[in-house]
Image 1 (spheres, each protein chain N blue to C red):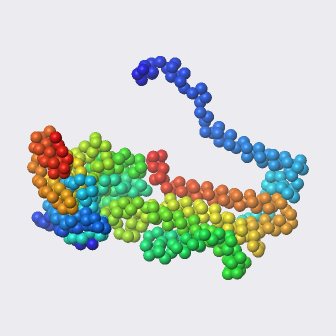
Image 2: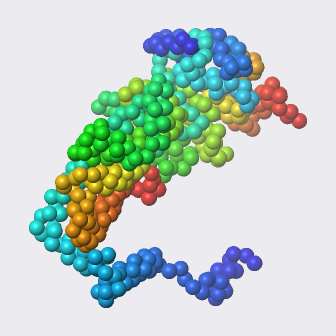
Image 3: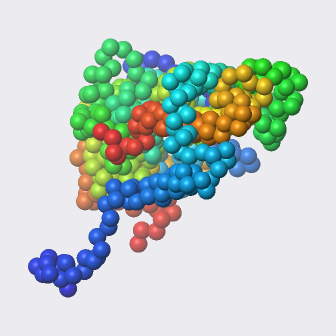
Length: 277
Length: 243
């Protein structure tokens, strides 16, 4: 049967069409919201009816109310700013070091031979396990928290910088040479943009590691910060504040990750090639 | 390393002179001592079987191989077009063509080069949005914009489909007639060599085994009996039975 005949008999074509049309994507998205909402409602209900003891797990509405109270009197902001400052300082120090060492190891054979082996060995140490040693080295003050964050951020950025540079297509570097680009211009036009997707991946992993390090670091003799808020609340059995702290950590992770995703989409437009104009 | 000198082009000096070019990969000697020269405006095809070292030779002439020995003198400027388009995926078409160019007239030159390959209106496209033939035309524009005295072409149409390849061959002939650049065309396609070249070099066992002028005139077609005779002769030299 030829194609023209098929087109002349539309009834047949309709019969072949699937009886159940594919669900639009928005329906699926709403459906995915059902179970989380049910869980939170169940939690609220269990807390209100007394199935969950408030000192074990307070109702979500109680946690939100505590959040509102602490935001209004400014307590949350003070702690949040301190936590963010530590994260930023640690990320900056660890990130710059990792970027520099990763670039040296990725670009130069000598750098690779000298830098990479010790980094590969150090990678095997769980950096959170270094807390006792770090306390001996830098004390229990701010430097401990920042060092921990910097350590956590260092490895993902180092490895992704290194891999990003190594994975650049050698043939593109050759083209740049035949077009008369010198070393510096090749770095700018080929190596940096070529390694950028990897750098973004490294940064996202580093930010995740930074929050994790902060959670641990702020539980060691901190006087401020979200972690301190949680530890202090535990002493007074303020479970709502503890849960609030967890919620803040989760939100920080979510917000930083989405922000980075947006930035990545903007800077790596070329990867979407066919969809961009 | 092969010494590679670049100088200014003047008078009747050849654009490219190579002497005793030798290259070995470990114990395997690929080029045993190649001598060749290309005159101004002359298109030379370098034919050879797979693994004969023709691409290796082109890379050496382009200054991309640090482990070769011999002397290479290039008078004037050279540009390279590779088998793959090798466009930087993170630069738009115009920026790819502009790579390494400077000067206030650079945007105008880029626009003219893209117009010459028929892609003026695609200057804002990303390389990923182009077809294989379009991308290769951009690569040709990237070479042309440098106004080279010598174009080094490494199987530039080898990765394209048969129809696109024919169009590209016609384009290259037109561009050559307009700009008068010299070219070294590395290819394994005998017909392509006969269509485009003034002279054909056969690379065999690491050296130039034959140097054949192609006296077929400017408007040559494969239907020409002389074309067929040369084609059979070349295929014979390459060890391909033609009967």
